[in-house]
Structure formats: structure tokens, C-alpha cells
Length: 234
Image (cartoon, rainbow, N blue to C red; front, top):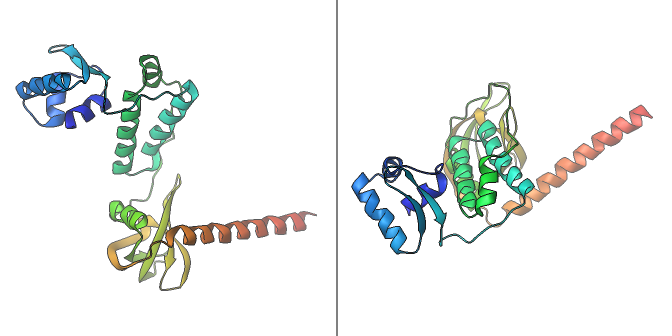
């Protein structure tokens, strides 16, 4: 499975040395693993000294996308590098590699030579010091977390929250949550969270409903501000 994953992800053709390093085996064992894949019906083109290309992967169904859909996928995953953390960016690249591995040859070439690129000038983003993996897990599995938070006035508070979702922006990462201390929706700048621990409460299946209520609340506020501006301009 590691060898198949490496063949899907890495630029083609992939040398035996690179594949052996990725799968943490000797080159001799790598050659045996290639033979095993071929015997199992996986079409791997190439030879020792040149490199290998995964031509047909029976573990993945064939996919087909338009040229614009391929460009959108490439652009979306590339943009993760500008605001996502390393595990999220790596996950996006690996998922895209698996998708590209299922494309017909012509479309795979389009993906390799996409015309659209994502670039932003260098910027300073506040560092996130907590375990984002735990925070994502809390959102997915709907359990509370305890945090130590330092606000813009440098006041530190300890509270237990129900994390609902995160919002990535060019400047910072925001967390939408239900605060058990204030008994209300709150937004937190994730870089200002100084400590994070798993809480003891499950709030399944309330996350979707709480998030919908938050969106409705913010939407009503925005519309109210727009109406105020319209009245003052009339």
C-alpha cells in the first residue's frame, strides 16, 4: 500500500532509489515489491535504471474531468500552502495525487502542466502553537475542549468551548465555537489560544445546528448594517 501510494504521489517516472526511500525498504526489496504489484494486476511501466510509472491502478476507479475542473483542483490545492498548516497542505497534495493517478493520460498531462498558479506576496502570519489536529478532531467528533485564551487586550481566560468550525483567512485562523462560560457563540483567533486540552463533554449531534444558528446570527447583523448604511446615504 505504501508503494502504491508513492507511485500515485511522486512525479513520474519515479526511480527505484526514491521509491525505496519513500517505502523504507532496500532497493532489492523494492524490485520484489514491484514484481508483486505487477503479479496482482497493477500495470507499472518502467525498468530499473530508468524509473517507474503507475499506468493502471485497479484500486482506484477511473476518473474524468474537464480541463477547467482540473485547473480548479490544481489551483485549490496549491492555495493550501498559503494559509493551511503543514498536515492539511500535505493531505491536500496527497489527495490530489490520487485523483491525478486515475486520470486518462491526456488529462494527467494537463494536470502536470496546469496554466493557473496560486501566488501571494510574503506575509507575516501569527504562529499557531496549539495542536490543530486535536482541534480538527474535536470539530469532527463533536467533543468539547478546554482552552487558555489571550484576547486583544492581553486578558487571559480559561474556558471550555464546543468547537464548531474554523475559517482560514490571509491574516489569521479563526475558530467559531459555543462558549460554555458565556453561554453564547464566540469567535476566537486560533494564534491567541495558548493552551488546548480535550474536554469532557460530547455535543453530538448539535454541531451543525449550532453552526447554522451562528451563520443566521451573523447574516442578520450584516444585513442590519447594510440597511443602516443605506438609510444614512438616502
